[in-house]
Image (cartoon, rainbow, N blue to C red):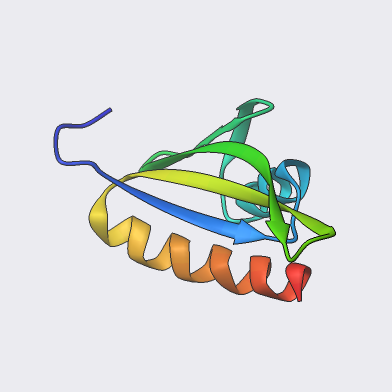
Length: 89
């Protein structure tokens, strides 16, 4: 990892780690394991948890920790978020 890289964390509800990994692959990354996707100028680590929505409903919340060149992250996070919102919507 380059010293100029920065880290940004975002959470998305209503998608799975599998789907997040697939989206990151379509954005140029390669899955190195079930919870990590890497590209030349960025990497992303994935984790999931259940969050309660009201007294009886639970949703999956996927947290993506993006690392990379700040310019690359701006575009990557925007494009990933658009895909994730469509899926979770």
